[in-house]
Amino acid sequence: MSNRPPPGPSADPTGADRGLLRGVVRLVVLVALVGAIALAGATYGPALVDDLDGFDDVDEIDVGTQPSPSSEPPPTGERDPEVTDPDDPNESSYETDVETIPSNDVEDFVHAEVNERRAAHDLEPIEWDGTVASVSRAHSEDMADREYFSHSNPDGERPYDRFRDVDDYCRGYGENIAMTWVDRPVEAADGNGTVEHRTAEGLAEGLVDQWMNSTDHREAILEENVPYGWDRGGVGIYVAENGQVFATHNFCHEW
Image (cartoon, rainbow, N blue to C red; front, side, top):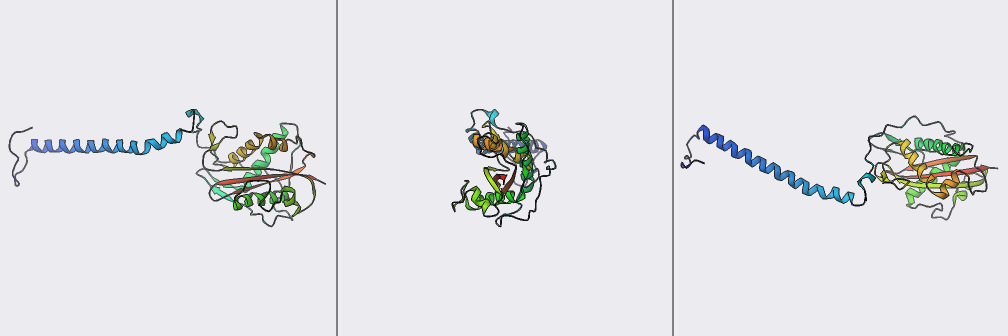
C-alpha cells in the first residue's frame, strides 16, 4: 500500500490508484456474495433436514421421474342411468402439473383395475352399474362434505340403506371405501416409502392397491367370505378442491 498521503478532493487518482480501487470493490462484492450464500444455507438447510427426519433410510423417498399422462380410460358402461342418487355430485376434478384428473376417468380406471385383479384369481368381471355408481359417488362426496370416513354416515345409514333409498334390485350388497390425496406425498399402500398421485391412472392404481393390501377390502373384491358373488357394481370418486380424494366402490348381487 502506498505511503503517500491521499489525494485532495479535486485530485484525479492515478491509474494505479484506480486499479487498487477496483480490486477493493471486487473483494467487497465477493465477500458479500459468500456471506449471502452462507446465510441462505443456514436459512433453508434445516428445513430440508427436518423433512428427512421421519425416514430411517433416504431410499424410502420416492423421487422418481415425471409420470406420463394417463392413457385413454377403458370404457365401463352406462354413465347416465335412468335412476340416480339425488345427492350425486357428478364429476369433480383436480389439476396437477401433469394433467387434469377428472373423477369419471378415475372411476373407469378403478373399475378396470378391479376386474384385472379378479381375472388374476379366475373370477368373472363385475358389470358396471350406473345407478350403483351414483350411490357410491354421493357417499364419497358426503364423506368429504361432512368430514367423516366410515361406511355409516352421520345419520346412521349404512351402505345397503343408502342404496335402498334409490332402488331395490340388489339382494346382496357390499362396500369398499378409501381416502387419499393427489399432488402430495402419501404413504405407499405396501408401507414402503411414499408415492405421489399426479395422474388419473396412477391415482386409480393407488386406490386399488390400498384395497388389495387390506384383508377385508381384498376379500370383498375377490368374493372371499361374502354370502353372494358379485355380478355388478359401481365406483364413485370425489376429488375435493384441496386435493383430498374419497373413493367408494359398491358391489351388488342382483335378484
